[in-house]
Structures are given as structure tokens and as C-alpha cells.
Length: 326
Image 1 (cartoon, helix red, strand yellow):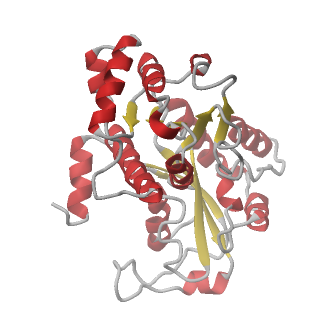
Image 2 (cartoon, rainbow, N blue to C red; image 1 turned 180 degrees about the vertical axis):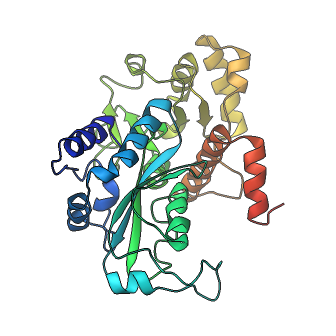
């Protein structure tokens, strides 16, 4: 969520005025999910008062501190059902009380499960408020009469797809769906079309090939997937990624091809240590062969890299134990 949007809401509430939030500020309301739409956002915003200031101020501080945190929303479409919903026979029990009331609310929650909310909430509400840390639609259908949404207060990891191959086309779709900010690069407009990459940022290089890729700037926090069509421009793509010191570089291709790319990458100025940091072949190993399958293998690896980057070994072990994997 943009810092400017939070500041605008805070300023409006401090003046005693009705705030405004646009759909682009809270994209969960424009994804076509049931009961989460522009009308729901309008109703939620209309319910805000100066009592909600601590929640928005905490969200603003989370952005400034780089906290892994979310601004969440309780959305009620049937007030009677919301306050009378009950536990089911399968999941953990949360007591006799349903939702605290039939009104919408806004709340803050971070990955440490700190919750800030100015309205009353029940144990069942708290369970769902904490679940926004697992994604904006986790368990939202579990109880009757209400649903939940959230917006992250941190930037998505940017993933560069160097090459508008068929694998890249599938990968852009899957990576966007799991929260990555995808940018695809190619020199042929026919391959990097809006039809093939409807939700990704698209950059068309001037001239033939990838000779102009040096005009682009990557951040050390970025991930790079080298997927050039026919592998023709893998060497210069790898060199570009390694020069920018990005967090992750992965490249498609078989062992024989990659040995040839190795020589060209070293000739391009990379060191042996840099070359060894390139994940090759890219993606988790589980028998993927088709472009769609390879894209799934790659996005699974990207998720794993992000998970290990964000969480300590201790935290990961605790999570795996809670799922019964250890």
C-alpha cells in the first residue's frame, strides 16, 4: 500500500473528514472475489472514524520500519449471520461467540502477530485477522456472514524475466498470482505483447538482441530469471544480472549449453564465483518438461528463495513443525 494513501487517510480522519481510498490502493477489492468489491470498499471507508487513527498510524510506522505487515479489513455482508456463526467440527474451536458485531473494521497485523484494531473483535475474529499474514484470502470462507481482505505494507519482490519465451509467459502469470512484481524484457514486440503478458511490466529493448540491456537498472533485492528464446541471449543476460548483484539469478538450459554460456559469461567480465551463484538449471526438480510445468517449477523455487530470505532457519523449522512436516 502506498505511503501517500495512508497519510491521506490519517490527515482526513484528524480533520474529522471522510477519508478516501481508491481501488488501486487496495487491489484486493478489484480481484473479483465474492463480497469484496468497490461497494464493499466504499462501505468500509464510510465507517472509519478518528477512533481508527491508531491502526493507520501503526501501518504507516510499519512502512517506515520495513516491517512485514498488512492492513486488513473485515467485511460484513450478513450481520446476523456474522455474529451468530459457530465453529465447525473439523477446525480449532474459538468459543461460543461469533464475530464481535455486524460492522466492518480495519486492523493492522504483522508477521509477529501484533494486532492493532480500534474496534471490538472476538476470538474468532482474531484468528482470521492473524491469518492475513498468510495471504489476503486465507480461510476467509470459514465462517458465515463475513469475509476478510488485506493489503501488504511492504514492497513485492521484483522478478525480471529476461526473454519473452513461452515459459516466461506462463511464469509471469503464476509469479504475479503469488505476489511477485514481474517485469519481462525482450527485443521483439511480437513476443512481448500485452496478450502474452497482460499483468507484467513490459520492456522492449531497442535494436536487435539484448545489446541494449545495459540501459536497464536492477536492484540488489531483485530476482532474475534468464529465459531468452532459444537461449540465444543467455550470456549477456547473465552478465547483466551478475553486474547488478541481484539476490537471485537462475537460468534455463541443459548442462552442455550452460558450459558454453559459462565461457561467454566469463569473457563478459563475470568471475567464477559469480557464475557459481547462478542457479542452473533454474527451478525445483520434479520432472517438469512442458513450458507450463517448467514455469511451475520456477515459481516454486522463487517462493522458496523468498521464504528463506524473509524467515530465519528457526522460524522456518517452527512453521514446518506446525504443519507436521518434521
